[in-house]
Amino acid sequence: AYAAVLQDRTVPCIPRIQGMIEEAWREGVDPQGASHFNQRLKGTQAWIGATEIYVVLTSLGVRGHIIDFHKSTGADGTHPKMFDWVKHYFCQSSQTGRLLPRLIQTRLPPLYLQHQGHSRSIVGLEQRKNGDLCLLVLDPGSSASAIRKLLSRDSVSTAVRFIRKFPRNMKHRQYQLVAAQGVLSAEEKQAHICNSRTLRAERIP
Image (cartoon, rainbow, N blue to C red; front, side, top):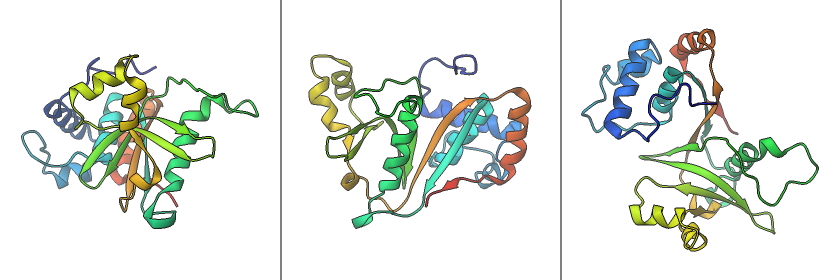
């Protein structure tokens, strides 16, 4: 569904992403953010956050949605409501029956996960027999060898334990997610650009 609007079929490097954000600003997306960065990101060390990813998605013609888990919702600073939201996201195509299958394969894109100073990708979720949830999180700081192990049938069952994140591992004060939710028509894209003058995230709780 997204192939028609993607400029690159490979993952862009950081300078390319910075350039894409600047291009989106020139289109009129998020004028407040553009002003904050003085219209320039390329060549800087500025953080790329959830808002900037939303800006790129809008420019590409993708409907982006920011979800802000602005405070913990569980014991010891954990975020169970974020885990529940992620479960609903990945299971949404399998909600027709009363019981979910043991394994759900989906064409839904990964979720962009942002917390203070770092961003990662949520590529899936596991639910244990006792109901506990576990996010599968890819970190761009991972080594190439670690990623290759995930792609190998011989080593994936061992390597996957390094990307499992339980609530006890996710105790930053605040998290933001960005979800891609379909392709925008030309008219919808212009409406999103106009509405981006005041960006709003869905706040949970």
